[in-house]
Amino acid sequence: MSEDSKNLLIINNISYGLTLSGSYKKVFFSPKFYSENQERFFKDLYHSFKCTNNLEWKDYIEDVDVSAVLCWDSDEEKKVFEEKMINYQNRLFEDIEFDFTDSFSNFRKKAEKKLPPSYSHAIYPQSDLVMKEIEYYFDEKKLAKSYFETRNGLVGRDFSTKFSAYLSCGALDVKYLYNRVKEFEKNHIKNKSTSWIIFELLWREFFYWHYQKLTTKYFSEYGLKGSLDFSRFKDYEFDELRELPVHNFFYAALNELEETGYLSNRVRQIFASIWLNDLNLNWRSGAFLFERTLVDYDVYSNYGNWMYLAGVGGDPRGRRYFNVEKQLDMYDPDRVYMKKWL
Ligand SMILES: Cc1cc2nc3c(=O)[nH]c(=O)nc-3n(C[C@H](O)[C@H](O)[C@H](O)COP(=O)(O)OP(=O)(O)OC[C@H]3O[C@@H](n4cnc5c(N)ncnc54)[C@H](O)[C@@H]3O)c2cc1C
Image 1 (cartoon, rainbow, N blue to C red):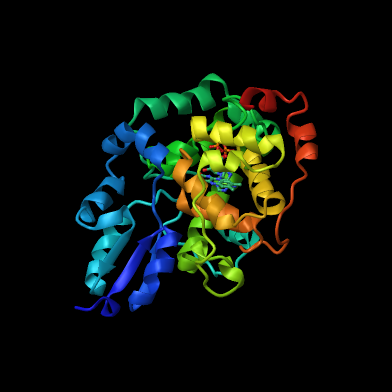
Image 2: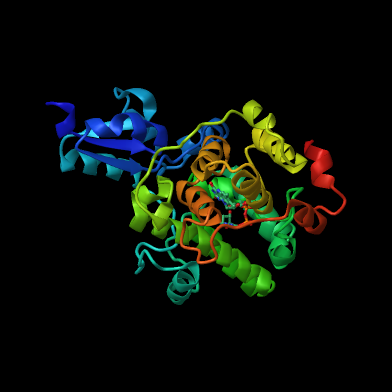
């Protein structure tokens, strides 16, 4: 069979699209579900959690080179692949009415109506490590009561939940986490902080459903604002980025990312703003850097947030700009973050 009668599936790797797309009948993009750091740090969790799909996916394509490309000849083959890869999505909803033009606020309205008082089929964490973190957050320190006030922090364990890595690798069921927030509201306090945790989980959910509608556009230059274009993509090394003349905050964030695989939400936003506005780099290259390195890499949240900040997602406000000095004055007034990571 000649190549141009085959379909080509590209696992999240935009650069392959450029060189190979001409030779195939149709090219599809599909999310890659884990980063290098997730694989490194969560090896044991991946093995212990029954629904995780990443290892199976690797087995399935073991005789296909480059870990990113798969060709298939029939819909049946594609179906088998997708079922193996997308068998566990760890979402709040099995299905929800979603239009690709839905903004987050439209989605939120629909979603909030569907949220139950609690989920009866939530999966109890299989790992002691995850359970310990849940108990620390909700029972020991009762941090959920002040999440709203602390969530923009830059340094330390307690300013946000730090559950993202466990959610992303499937070791923590988002429905179980939701139940714990609801339980906390019953047993301790229901306030803006507790509802804001759920609000954030709805963002996570939003990007997932958004992707289900937009698929390939999530990896394209213009996102949902234009035609498909997979060109102008570059994979940057950390050292190369350190050479760029820019605000010191950028280097601090690079150091934190390289060392820990984690950045707070606020740091991710400022970092992305520098990337897009000050350095004028391609948003998909930034997303790819995060994809390679984040310990909580989640294809939907990562590409969705980048797309949103780059102004090519569903946000009517367009590209977002953050003034770094102002942000530091607000969120790092004593420059603790800067001193720690520079
Ligand atoms: C450019 C950029 C890239 C990002 N890439 C990822 C990614 O690959 N994986 C990922 O899980 N999150 C991503 N986020 C969202 C957010 O930064 C992280 O979820 C959060 O910092 C993780 O820390 P936490 O668990 O303590 O979050 P908390 O503040 O405690 O929030 C609770 C949970 O809500 C969800 N959440 C919070 N904020 C967001 C958001 N903006 N979008 C989607 N879900 C959210 C996460 O599941 C998080 O664990 C990204 C944000 C930006 C700006």
